[in-house]
Image (cartoon, rainbow, N blue to C red):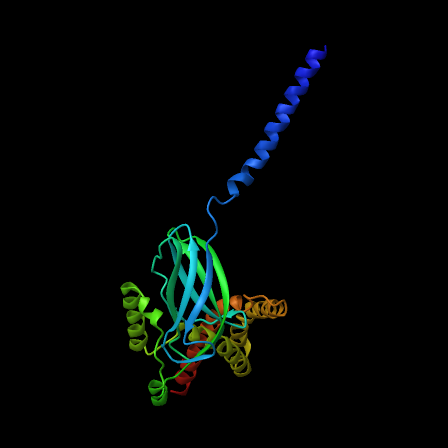
Length: 269
């Protein structure tokens, strides 16, 4: 009888141990086999509080430690919001190890940043590290005096690879050919454009045309309320929904305005 109890007790302990190992197995698999890459800002050119001409690069010198080759993406931020329209190079694949890397960031228009965000990606496009560094810099339209006052770059800037130099030249040429046009500026203009058109057309129309004019408001009023609440909650993505819907509502009202204008021209003729 005692032997049977001991055998049953041993069996129960084995079952419990097996169940415990089964529960711990997913956590063991989730433990990374390689250390997380680290990023550290060493230097910048120009230095703190730099004022650059539009399109002029801000060079950054980083030290990274990574067990695998990585791509590095740099973006500018101001008051915790990304400043869009930046140009940089994320195609270079930096080798694994404890190394230094030279990167650049530029804006083809007037812009201001107080922080740079550096993200590291592996060759499979998976983000493996991110770090924020204070960096005050401003870009403004170039003048003759600005061109004459350009500083001599630091020696480590010459360590840009040939591929980095070629892509930086291509980005600069593309900005010059397009006149520095930023498509995001058009999206931002649609927000006040919608509200202006909505007010004008609501005042100028009546009857069925006024109902047609007010159709976008059925969507935009809740969107505006959500945007205000998101801003009050200090969400970093508070304007996103408004930026998606305002261009469509603005386009609808522009088309409606054209139709109304053609109707009036046809009546006057």
